Image (tube, rainbow, N blue to C red; front, side):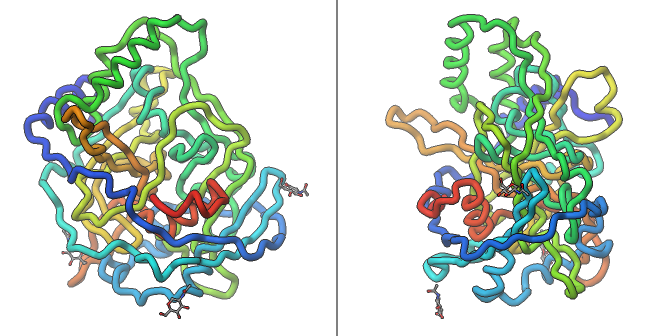
Length: 424
Ligand SMILES: *[C@@H]1O[C@H](CO)[C@@H](O)[C@H](O)[C@H]1NC(C)=O
Ligand SMILES: *[C@@H]1O[C@H](CO)[C@@H](O)[C@H](O)[C@H]1NC(C)=O
Ligand SMILES: *[C@@H]1O[C@H](CO)[C@@H](O)[C@H](O)[C@H]1NC(C)=O
């Protein structure tokens, strides 16, 4: 079961060109209005002990089997007080200080607080390969250090993450915290960004070529994967691609964890995968393009989800020290208010990777097709067995879905300014 190596990506891209159906065109993500989160009270907590246990992915739901899709969906809606509770958050600073912040929600009535209307999920096509490996190993220095692959970062605790601002990385909470305490790996967590070893710049020629590529980008075939981008990049390759990518590790200034992930004393409820997300704030901004956050649309409107990360398979480590990014895309099989159920192939190191979707921006004046826009709409949480209706179990890869409320919370963590978080 070898991974698809790079040449296959080109081939697959060609196949998709023929059969590809494009998702709905438009920029719906600029029109959604959102609740606003305000801090009401912050209190100091005891310093963490870092005795958290590494969470076995299949136990994120607390037991081996996750409450079924139906059961995830029909839980009574939370009232505003409960919503404010789970959207409160904990902050852990680099020096080990820990605080809890209560929040209040404004304008909740104006918006659809939960998921934008449930529509029956459907698997779009049968291209699903689950069992056979459908991942693409991207090892070309140029591709992995350029958007969108470059937004996939490594988290030193053994996970992946995605850059959602120059200073913020979104990843899975269970990489950092087990629901009761922080993991040892959270103590000095670092974020690794692949960058080309800097050498003398190669003057204006490079800049020119880059601009040319941008213009081409999106004007070509309609692909569902990122194959076209890679191919274009390949065309634009030059001597600069010989530079080796290396991880540049950044220190984390603070970690934010939603209260929904943290188990309160006395409650016997298990940690729930719906809140398996955390944001790491870096000490210093990273000067490269990040991927903006969005709200996950109903599955029926999703053509494909994509994510890239650092899967930890042995076979990937073979072949020398060259850094690689693993990319995949698939359709979502089912959904609940807070989770996306899919069969994208992934190995544990990819946990925490940013799930993103692509849309074309509306066409410009000249009738040109708009450029691709990408938004992070979920976090890859891991593999789970899920109870099915009428008995039996089925396994899925689960992603936390960014709902309007989670968007409001994460946006608040990034900006701290409600006026910047009113629209997606
Ligand atoms: C999605 O889940 C619901 C609830 O369990 C189920 O009725 C439906 O058949 C599932 N859809 C697919 C495509 O599996
Ligand atoms: C730790 O850092 C935070 C944030 O920078 C600061 O507010 C707090 O006073 C520091 N605590 C200690 C014990 O140094
Ligand atoms: C939202 O609506 C409910 C009932 O319609 C009301 O009780 C509540 O105060 C409203 N909340 C806000 C923040 O306006």
